[in-house]
Length: 310
Ligand code: CP
Image 1 (tube, rainbow, N blue to C red):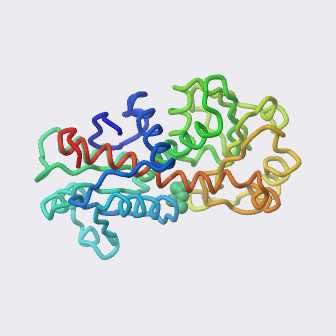
Image 2: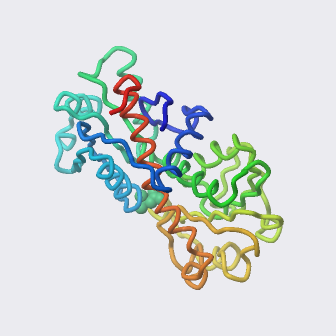
Image 3: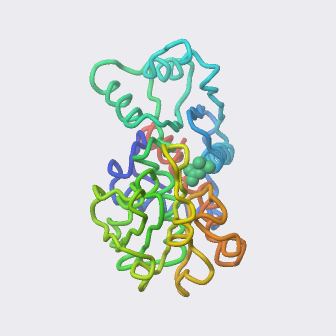
């Protein structure tokens, strides 16, 4: 059982290495049959300003498995559309009786700012946890945690593993959270991308000029979605496919293939590879998302109860 104290989930940086390990161990314990805690007195609001399939439904599934109540906050029908301040919205949800808000937003820093407002002056009516379900291009901590669980399942020792990240690194929040997390566990990370998808402000990675160079000794290849909705201008798909598409032929023999999803079929990865045995890890990531999110929610709900069982 997770015993670490976790009040909110803002990003990977705000988690200790012990908390990360505790979440992963608990997720794998639940996957192996351990019963989730009963959290039937807990209520969570799903506040999604951006679309989602995996994150939204695996949080909803996790909350259902915990016996908690889950509510969809329809952002366009809420009083946010009348100009209500986001802190006030969360505070009113606390007053109504909510224990957690699971938030996906394109607004960088919204979750941290709201938590800081509560710590520095304005006060929430009662404890309410804010959980980042994907924020702008900067953080997607629960995706990084489920990716960590998936990697741990395949390779018990991560120290010295070689990970290659391919694709739209500039716009990816997944990549920033994954680099922050996997660096702590000794994973060596190489990045390869066309110039227009590079982000050389990212630290602790090695940039490669081409896929051949990047794929040498690779244990894990992580493809990223081209984030069309965040790109202005023309995307050079033909150039991308020719130089960066992952295929059955170029995926290194001993490497596993990961992708956070959704996949742009036949752009980032060929359909042949996706639908083959080697493409299955991508679905395992979605599957592990449920166990990982159960472990995170258990830890947060327990911490709200002063560490006692929910
Ligand atoms: N990986 C991920 O965040 O997928 P969704 O956008 O479908 O939630």
